[in-house]
Length: 253
Image (cartoon, rainbow, N blue to C red; front, top):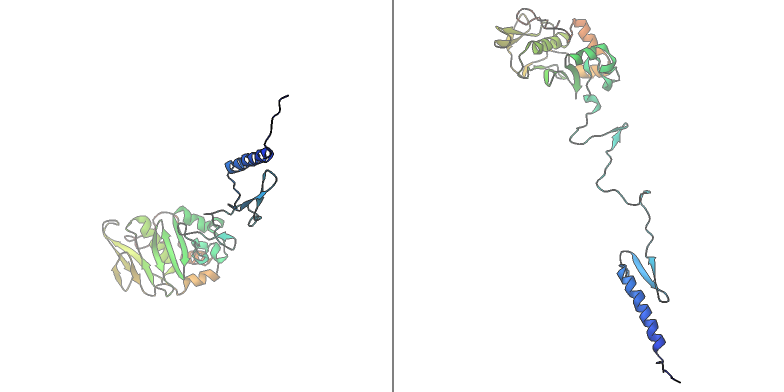
């Protein structure tokens, strides 16, 4: 008969070894017995039970808030643009010859005059109480709220520029005010005159005081179609070929 004596503490030693194995597995999974990242470990019999320290609730129904994403504030349902696409206030919207949508009138697309002006790259619009006639990228005629009229060719002394300036003057300025040429259109000098009493050399930015009705932009804001009516009354149109006569003095056709 062979008898083996088993140490009395063998059972407890085996239990400690099993606990050590479990502890090692828990550590390998990235958890410890100390709270970390909101997670703590609770002791069980020979095993670790992981519990959440705090219940994380989503914000605004989102699991995680978005960073770097912002929604532009809106006004009247229209997003306000940033610096790159500068917001155009309502009163600055192109009104063309029909005052546009900024005044509650018809838009360019909805009226014949506006379409004609678009075809010739000429527009009438208002900004902060002033009225502008724009040809391509140049405000060729600027009518201030006090009635002063400033003229500019933008460096383009062409038939189209002269036509646009004189058409605008015929429609919106005092009778007879026009730009005429001395000599060839592109090589000679231009003059601003009322046709009778005076004339002065034309240059970009030349201003004729009190040559147009005061507060023209404000009137247009309250009278949809005012620009169309003024052009019709003057027999002026931005469409068509150059209509000037007498070296360019006739202007608006």
